[in-house]
Length: 308
Length: 327
Image (spheres, rainbow over the protein chains, first blue to last red):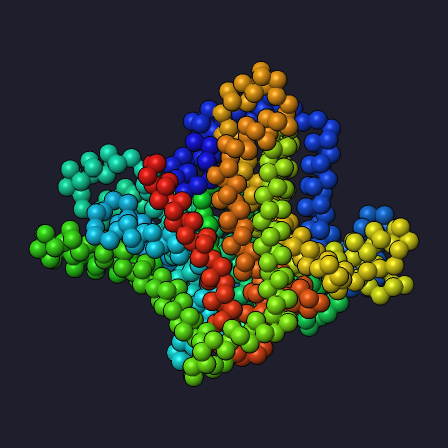
């Protein structure tokens, strides 16, 4: 029962409930942190935060400051502190196409996140609550496809999209992300649905509800936590993706933030004030989503999500 | 700009609306059939759209890729195994392969060890300390690899000697009166590859920590107490009581990180673009596709990746079956 991170772990809705059910020691660990432990954790937390913090500070410094002194000088020299400005963000947003790229990232991520959910939910429902020939084999196919890297699709899809004149368009990436995310979506949702009480479905059947009604009135509302954790995964994955965007969209009018940021690097060269501001524009939304919905994200992780 | 945002929102609404209409129609279609057939056909109709997406975007292209690996650069003529012999014949590609192997050998193991260390040690802090330290370690998971690479490129940045060092690592060297080092160009003993691995480690340790932490907390307290009563040291308890009980989770984390490492691309592409002997398979794939326009070689690289993934796939399926049998 300690094998919490495996596929069946979705059976327990939260980590908290799981540790109670398993008789784990939870927060009441009798072993208390000694000095060594504290020092180790403080050092590692600093190592983790300082690079982000330095980027953050630099993104507010004027070009001359950023190139002539390290960001840490801001805290020892009041002049530098007084020079801090939003100009870099304005410049990155307006002159370096990052504003356009931000909208593009949204335009790519939102449809690619929300459209697959219903499609996956229907499949997951069938896999969980319906009997049909070939069900287990089909689901095992999905389990094995989870680990297949999406590299397998790029070369042929480029050619197909080329014939359809779709390269460089949003639908090209929407469809690709829907296809790439589908097996993970079905997997997460099916594992969650398998934990819903069978009696509820049985009684709905006795009351004369069709599968269609049961799905929309019972199963879908009950699966909201799993839907949310998939949505967060898929959103972060699509927003943060570079390769799919490079292959199917590339730099230009429709480029998302990740492509824009790599372009900023090559065109601006050593201009760290723009690169850091652009970098922060890229990571601000996923960090906000992540901090706000961390609970669902962790739940999705402990449900054994593995994506190829 | 506003137009694009609107288009996106409209697409969400239309996309979901169209999906709803599709399922409603499929369901209606099943309902006109005789009752015996309705029950038989309905599950397939529910599953079909999802499978269509998977077949169109994963299975069918995968088959084509496999075929393309044995064709020439524009996928027109058969060339047998030439793509593979050419790749393996090139010293650069053998280096690329070796680098990828280095990543696979080092990063998953290091991620698990660090993640487990943080999970175990943070477990001993008070509730606030534990929460804060875990959020800090976990946060980089939300950051794209491109973002992470940008952040770390700044840490490793080297200005020419004599100029002020604005990269953290060279500034620290400067404090000790040492000359700046162009970190990402230090290819002796693959030092620069290790610097790139640190970026991935930075981004992935939080993931390992969250899973392992849940597992460590799930270890039954009586097993720990029994060991303490028997006079076991904390070290012994950790290695002989805790580790064996969380083995399953350790393997899961290890496999997940391994898959991620095999296809690592963004970090290398942004930080060195494979220069200074840091190239990996993912980046070489992109080079072949976008710079060399060699579809055959690109497809051959994917086939190599796929072969590497097969054992993991096999394990995954076996593991899933065992889990289902237990449930």
